[in-house]
Image 1 (cartoon, rainbow, N blue to C red):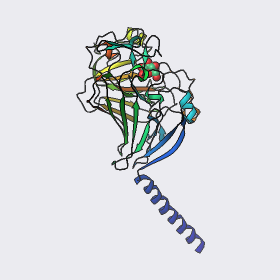
Image 2 (image 1 turned 180 degrees about the vertical axis):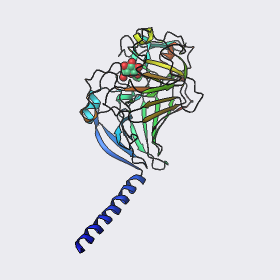
Image 3 (image 1 turned 30 degrees about the vertical axis):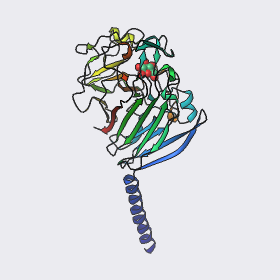
Image 4 (image 1 turned 60 degrees about the horizontal axis):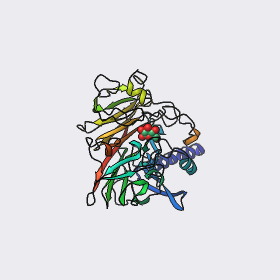
Length: 376
Ligand code: BGC
């Protein structure tokens, strides 16, 4: 009898201990900093941000990138929903854009050329015949300085990069900051701040891939998408804008009400053929708080995107082919991830009719994009 009482007391105490540990884990927001590797002689750090809900965001100073977003499904089971690699070398040798901050010019510049104040600038051609995402050694492939923001209300890390004059062919010494905040509402808030000492052009984005089933768990064709955009930017066969802003109404690009990504992707429509699927900028209406929602009905995960940028490149992983092996040894197959890259329009320096991407000395560019996760 005594033994039974002792055993049950032990069980009660361990239960209380377990519950209080669990509450502690739930209530403690933390940012952990670890060595991640070395690139070009510079230390790279990995940051693990845990919010009050116990959900985890991981960032690395290589490319100021997101490598892990661990959020629950509707049963409370957590999974990572973004692309990344377990090993540092995977990140260096694999797709360099996964989760990265992209600059100096996110997206394409036709034939790698633009003119500013009568001077022609020539950029590296890394996506024939164009320059893509700031060239092969853009901001995605440099080590950024990093700082944990201790005074922030939520776990936050600020990355800073000083991009020298004529880096990747672009004029001006630029100072770029990308600050990530991981709130208790499971929002990744990305704040960008940029300045230059010479007139220049630039376009910044984050290139995270998402799969709300969990990264590496099937394709994204069943994800239900809404984009608050009345028009999109048609491109030529090299994915360079023609200059037209085409109304989405009556086209497979109309996501003003809910459609799955797969529903119309194989339609015989010129732009779907040129893009090999969706790989286009949508002109955001910017009228409502939430610009984009993505819902995955099996897990119940919902992602909302809010941005003050004029556009979003919706890319649905048409060039993925399973050769990249990511977290947990899972291959990233054809259309197994989608990107919603907020920013300016492609090739804007050669399209004066598009919102300007010129930054002058003395000006400070500021912009914010939020990725918010919940369940429905
Ligand atoms: C582009 C795709 C490109 C991909 C590379 C996207 O932003 O729109 O065309 O293949 O980046 O990761």
